Image 1: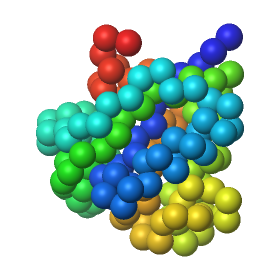
Image 2 (image 1 turned 90 degrees about the vertical axis):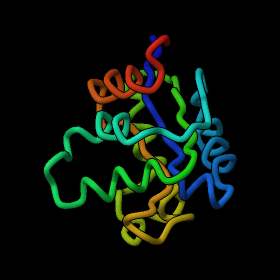
Image 3 (image 1 turned 180 degrees about the horizontal axis):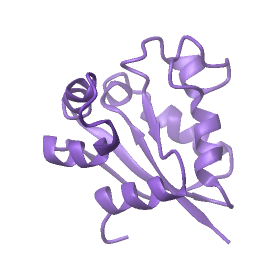
Image 4 (image 1 turned 30 degrees about the vertical axis):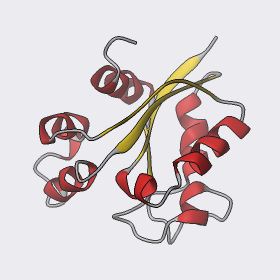
Length: 136
């Protein structure tokens, strides 16, 4: 049985030319890209994506960041709990605390520019894939 999750190479990853490295790590782990698109999203779509953070002090900054320039949106497929595999590859949210060998641990420094997003569970994966790849 296969499982899918959403991964985003955020604008900082695209700007720094790190999308290929992030994809390389995902594929080296044995996961498969089933959809990918480089695009700049609008504030409404960003708001839907970050809906669980609406009303929090950092919500506007999240929306401004993800909409500032193109990001690479991907659907990744693998065995059961693919989202967990991706989250482990990414490392913890704060790159200064992320373990060496993880994407954030090796390539990021700032909490606000942490390169990559991965769905945090199967329900989030389904919701997020529906936002960015509604025909998949």
